[in-house]
Length: 359
Image (cartoon, rainbow, N blue to C red; front, side, top):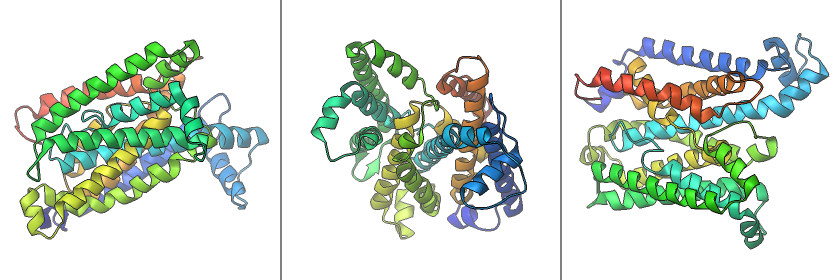
């Protein structure tokens, strides 16, 4: 398969365009549903009128002060976090799968999520000492930066061990990811053992994943970190297409393979670390969403990456909506919802592909 065949006009362009537009519509539907459902219902018209009023526009729909307060202070930061988390994890998964040419190269499987989680748990347990040692750093930036550093460190370790002679050995990379996950889980277990009762309750809920505790103060440092990765990762689409042919072929096509790989891994770690810092560990989004998109529109990364971002964001908002309403008045951790849906789906996907012998 040539790069031209992957990125050119012969790959069912109209079907891909319809799929992209459908995903954009699905994402808008998920945003309106997530923002509108709850103890204070908010109609789509009121949603747009409140946002218009916020930026100085007068739209022809009525809303109450209560609806405005609930949307701007509670639901909108949650919706923004769901979009950033879902899009970031799905983009990171699609990028790593294309980069390493392996369908299992999920941020969680190769240790990115566990490394970010271990760093974030360390900040929660020892946050007071870290803040005193870094007085120049705003408190709200400490957790996302630590999560990013943890994810990046684990990614660099896995990549360094798996890279031999300028080539990445995929089985070694996956085995390194298993080892890093085990070490990170052991570290988190030790930190949980050392934590007090209040920290233990926070950590248990946080490790299962949740969008519930987000506020604008917590979200603000995540927006530039995750936003930068989400904006820049689709720019690697043609390089990832070339990587499907092999590293040597990508080099002959004019790419500085090692430089592009380092940048792509850095941005994938940034997206994962920023998402883990606020929402906790949420599995299967980065693994399953790119496979769903490949079933819909094929392996061309020019469309695969933006489509994965939109579907990941929409599914995260739907999963959050389910977690908020399935066990009322309590709230189910969103990581349980994504695992209950993503695990069986991935098993079905493996069963469906077993006779084909490839991805």
